[in-house]
Image (tube, rainbow, N blue to C red; front, side, top):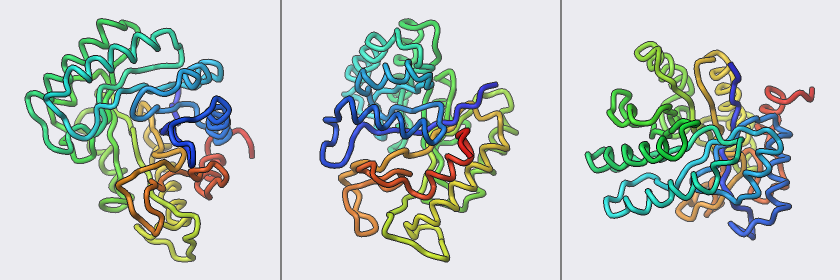
Length: 285
């Protein structure tokens, strides 16, 4: 058993967006390693080739995926096929990659037979092009655990946000306890979890939804405890390592950004939660 303590990463940065330099990618990987993570989920698209090279060099385990996200579009099937073929063909020789992920939260608008068939086609492509790796999928937390979709990929993970968007923190514990009790032989992981924090918001009495650094700490302390007690989780990925651009968001008087990162969008400030992970995961006291 080798626990994959991972983070998710979007490929953007304040003022440069997707046009990141190699030096910026280098800095991102260094910060991730400083925190003690040993795996990265490259969400939700193919990243710069330099990043895969860095992961090979540093020994970081990679979850690679295509941008098949949120809403299944029947007219988009050929695009998903092209994206998957290109992802595998261009990155097959990177030893850091452990899996090819088929989709992310694709069931937000429901499960249809066309969606299922699209996933079967992508899964077949993965196994035809690469017999040495597994297929994976990140399931929306609302997807029923008995859904036929969960039987298509080799391994499955859930995106869970109990304690932030819905419910209380112990909802994460209950979800996995129930899943593992019902399906003890199925491989299950945690592909996303997180809580937003804006660094200008501080409080002595943190509560869910207040966007403070303190609640983000309460949240992640709980999640680290939860993960540590469930070794059957094949991997876990914090959402997100860095704040990132999100045009549709307008939260906490800081529009256009998803604030779940444990490092700010400009990489200048490590939030308090960063140091909680560093204490748990890194070898540095």
